[in-house]
Length: 268
Image (cartoon, rainbow, N blue to C red; front, side, top):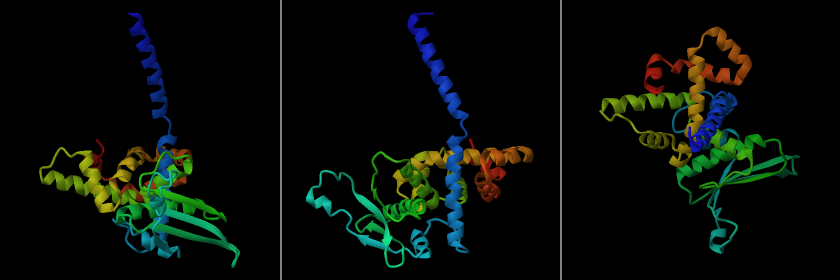
């Protein structure tokens, strides 16, 4: 074996080890499942008897929480040429002390010029921050139309929660199944991922950019739901101890959707 070939083999073996270890890391998909659980539990509790379907009515959620939404020009700085502002703000949250009752005053602002789907996502994203910082006396956050790299893990979690609120897993599965069957009946196979994501974004009222970013996270959760579906009851009980009640409750909410037809159509 030549020297260069030996070096390549060593590098490939090292990378193979890394990828193999990561593929066994349950935290990769369990954490996303827990976020999804939080999003769906939140929806179920807030929506009550109101049917959960696309598009999710975020304004209704804010009404139930008694938090008003203010529409303002959040980008007045653009006209002033502020060099520190390089992106367009579409959402803003402010939590500050309410000295009148000793609690806190929560305010949500959205840019009056932003497109409806962008506002929808911004409200869901800021909702995540609101929940995570609900008991704080003071907190602020701005959300941009195309966010730059996050400097806090909370931003990444808020991004995931926002999409999971707007695309609940059980509705996602049903929509995917219906889409595949209709496209197959029309002879539009094979189906491209881009076409499916465009369709999902349109029915869920979520911008394509955010659907595409979150789709891999949704696939992680889909894998875990499939795994829990195909194992026997004894292993499932072991998983409850390993993954926690949140993951198992999420599976319980969607297990009736994972019939043989869906398994055959979607899990390939």
